[in-house]
Length: 65
Image (cartoon, rainbow, N blue to C red; front, side, top):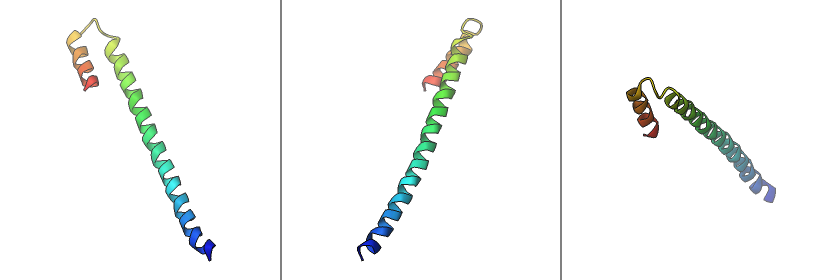
């Protein structure tokens, strides 16, 4: 009797936990990808600073926003 009550709860809990793990891993990988893109943008914006100052300022403003 007790097992019949507990089993579906544990089953649903396991499903929920696995779902949350998948969602959080996707979320964190998206964050990591975003920070990687920002770092690449920073390198692109900072490296060619001398040739075209106006373009780099626009790029830096776009990163900060």
